[in-house]
Length: 367
Image (cartoon, rainbow, N blue to C red; front, top):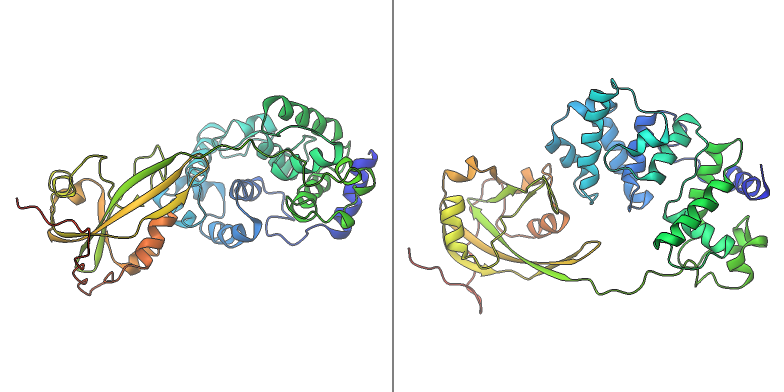
């Protein structure tokens, strides 16, 4: 074991994390669930979701057999819902194509939906002791600083260099503790802002620390202005319940329940009559909601309205009317949930208040 790995392993045993709920197991299923949840999500946010998820789906078979909406419901609030859909689909494939046995090598694991090279390598290392390199965001930062790697890590040429470096550093033994050490160091010591160099086992040979460039390495992503998209959504109320519809499997919030979305140039009244079979009362514009995605910003413009007549078409088209109490178990996008949680008049039995006419409200058109 070279000096880099030796220092990391010694530090991890003395000061690393040892009490995370997915540590101490070699069950590939539990490690896999943790790795997927930890993609783009903080550890402290993942822990309660991880425990609830495993209490409901304790093994691969139970997840594969579960309806997707139940999986999405448990995932609601964690974000990045494609992870839940991929997890469910991967479980089904493992049952159908691998006889319910989790694949052992990193290449086969990476072929599962929703897993990249680094996540697959982490699962192979922790579950099966495979000597493979990982390169998640925390590890990229550690390597860029320790070895003075220039350039934005997301650039293909820089990424290739980092993978080559990570592979050369893999020790001959102790892969589990070494892999955990890399993750822990990046998450708790070599952080993006204000790294604790005084507690780092690599500081004496770290290029960024020696040159006082921890604020410069790794190089930031080139600045780019995110495009903005606008979506008009209908908040339709009827006797204390709100209308929600299932979104298509592809696209943002795929498979989740959400508010009906108006076509770009569509009339709310015509949309409700033709698409939902409902007639509307007066519409009230609610304050816009802004929600950020990786590649764009979404501006939701909600329109609140009491339904005058409820059509039969809603149930046929996958729509449901839910009370406030029923929303708790529903798989909803986070901004939609926040909107509905603050909405007056939404309850299990009480009739909702009639929306106030405000300046700028849209009067009901005659039919």
